[in-house]
Length: 205
Image 1: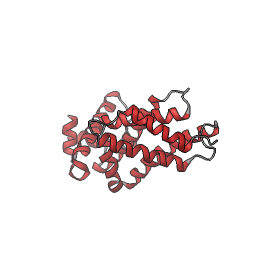
Image 2: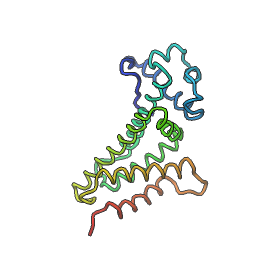
Image 3: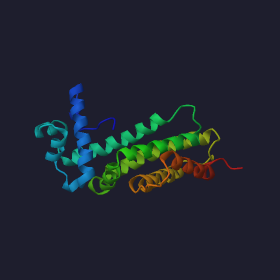
Image 4: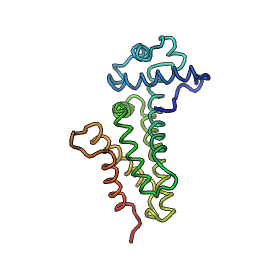
């Protein structure tokens, strides 16, 4: 994953500190992904990270705190994956296709994201809601830019953004988490979804 999120007053100021924080977040992702929030422990997270237990508290106050930071970190990583897949000259529909393909590939490499985000609904509802609201807002901005350029329906916006996000999430669930050996690859899934979007939010007439 990419950018990190620790307690605001505990942000590392050195490269070594940032590396340690990264190890803790990556270890937390593996621990929460395998065992779930309630079974996971700080001691196991630090053992996975190869750092002392006391080092944990340099960055986080509790298991809840690192879980919240991990949800924010995953949201940022999803954003970065989409950003890296998008080229400035891409038309709006191609942007959504590329963003979906990037998300599917990211989810394939980080399958724990589904369990962790789902658990956030109960462990930290605020982080859970913020994750989806942030993703939907990015999609809404892209859709409204496409609408302004006449490539999407003029009234397309927030409702369509949440619909697109819901489609993307469940495509990932079906074709990444529940993947079968004969399923289409990420590029084909994203292309099929793009055809659906073209019929649903493409310009009328």
